[in-house]
Length: 247
Image (cartoon, rainbow, N blue to C red; front, side, top):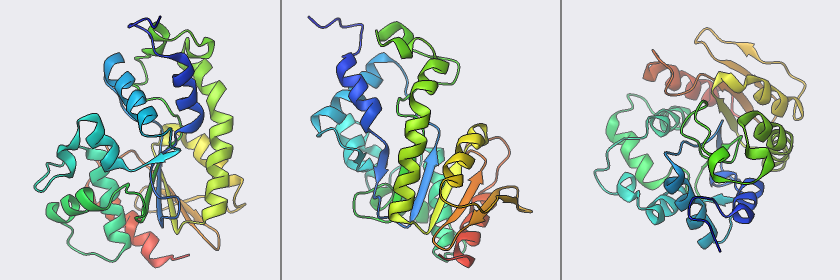
């Protein structure tokens, strides 16, 4: 009989091994972050159960999935821009597409109709598969019997190498125009992914992010969209760099 205070570990492990994010592997613009946020056991269990009900997909449609979760407000007309990470990633895309004077309504329309959608132009991936409230709050210790989930360090050792290799292979296969890694705390992993694809070294820009490119793809390591003190222009500048360095 299932214990209501524990995840279904078989399903949890399948999620860890399978799920990578949202959107379209054939998309031109890829964004890779550390992990999704999650609030508590009930929220995360619901996310995993809905993922299972929808077919254990490697990559989901961000709107359809969140609507199934009961978080569909972000994809309705007049939606509030409550997800600050999405806001800034959208600004990168719009800028890369040559848009000037990007405003809130431009971002809203893209969030509702385009971002992370199956068959569209963006791909939103996570380096680590499990949602978590924060780096310091590791709920899986109390709610799973999987030995490698007793602490975050064991979990990362278990997952990282395979995730890095899989993401690298996806980039090699699909050759997106741009890959933006966000969050400098995992710069080692971003560099490791890129190193398997190109020997070109990252160099710093005057705008405060790192970049390199090969003949197919522009790579960027940026600060996290919710990092203190960043203005929209920081993300617009990433988009402009992508626009002037098309693959």
